[in-house]
Image 1: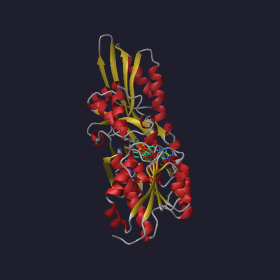
Image 2: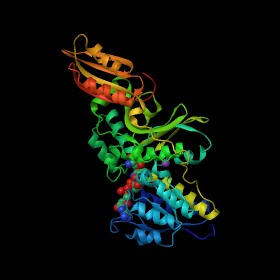
Image 3: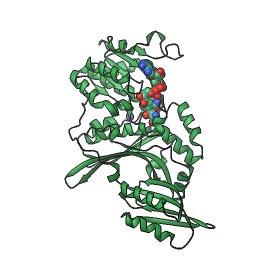
Length: 432
Ligand SMILES: NC(=O)C1=CN([C@@H]2O[C@H](COP(=O)(O)OP(=O)(O)OC[C@H]3O[C@@H](n4cnc5c(N)ncnc54)[C@H](O)[C@@H]3O)[C@@H](O)[C@H]2O)C=CC1
Ligand SMILES: N[C@@H](CC=O)C(=O)O
Ligand code: NA
């Protein structure tokens, strides 16, 4: 057993993730001490409801998180979530030179500049591997392993709850409501699950990924965000008919035009081919592709949500900051030197799948096609099926700007021959 003075840890929050952090920290104390070179000691656990039954040492509980942060601790682990009081508590910790480990993507996506400045001011560490894609080591590869390469694209499934819902709708036809309830019961969903279903959680993660990948400060407000609330059984069926499935994707791209570079960061549902590697990512699993100039394509896959997987990432960070304290040195600082501008969604090239109910009469297809031509949107594939007195028309486009595609859909929806726009969804994956 190392003879070094213990590293004292304050844990803020003891819900789904916090409980598992305590379990791993106490259950593996001897191994952690050997890996760090000093015992890692839980000094206190800040909770809101001290009388709630928990499998954690009751004598460590306190309702005064600020006092715990201010006490004689070396590291603060934050798994409360939300902006306040987490922001103030972590700023206080960092300004006092205490290293911070957090899983709080909502906070990082809005306030990482302020938190990083506080860490730089005192020389403390700020680690947050659990904030994106749960257990999957993803931020450390972006921040460290790929720091010598030029990343061009990061794309993937980064929200377990919505992936659990979409997988259920696709495989068993389960309802949206049932699967959301189950995701909450399993500890995947945020305290307010609208953060998941409306895409806020994935947008926060996309902002963090883009910031690290492109050495640029990207905040949640720079991210185009659409959730899954509007994904209907008709959309899933339309995707299935084309050999596709629907996933909520986070896409971070470096866009180069002449000598101008910008970053496009977006979160939205998209149809992808069933043969695409992301199509087989089901339940609360996450997967993220990274493309870099020299490394080429890489894929990171694993459990993106849940108490134990998330606690694994928290513990990995805790070991890293504790080692830095024992051995000297510091983890990577924020790197935002590139300062690339955010590209508006309207200018971002995407592809659409559009499914229409139309009158079954001569000339309909040419009227619809004319609207595409008028907006300079080229059609990749068309499928028409007649019924008694109406027909279904499915159009998949080539890439065009999102603004042009939106205007096309608006105009088509107003054509007298179009009875209903059944489904409109972006398409990712190979060109159809
Ligand atoms: N559950 C998951 O799968 C993942 C969660 N995260 C993040 O980890 C953090 C925690 O998530 P969960 O454990 O799932 O949430 P949770 O809601 O289960 O736990 C949060 C706990 O913090 C407590 N709390 C709230 N305000 C507090 C305060 N002022 N002082 C002390 N305790 C307070 C709540 O009572 C609750 O027990 C969030 O930032 C979340 O986004 C990140 C990755 C995955
Ligand atoms: N609510 C989040 C939890 C992990 O970040 C999710 O569902 O992915
Ligand atoms: Na991670």
